[in-house]
Length: 213
Image (cartoon, rainbow, N blue to C red; front, side, top):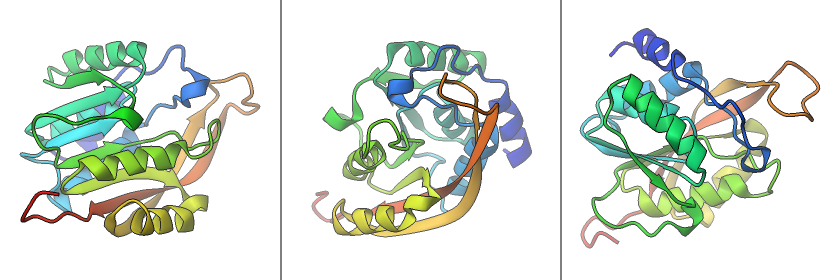
């Protein structure tokens, strides 16, 4: 699938009508989501015929993108039941088979098939400090091939240091820097739209392939 076609399909998905500020629910726009999954597949081969999990899937944009790019199985995980209902509706609209699970990723005990790749747009940690790093820690415990994640560019040094030193990543690479357009969703937002610089990261977990640990 071509990049522009992927972005167009994702642009038709429904977004949060009543986002929850405590969960830092911001939609992942089609521009970022399409480039994230397109790059994961076409530059690294991390999506097609793989099991892909979307941590904190929200409206299901990244999960849908993974399915459209050719993932063998896609699992969307979120703590919020309303988000999962919306994500399931979006998947149905595109006639995609995606498994949705209600769970806090911090308490995730994985059973069943191995997850090859985790994709996510975690909370930036502005409402609850360290939320983004909790997601990254959980993702690197589950993924066997790669983790793709968005983090504020201002936290770049901290993210890399934590991933390599504390979270078991064998590599942490910023693929590109993107502009994240945040719409005026909450009462404390003073402007109609704010854009911030975010990094698209690719992390590779440190795994002993011989014993699977």
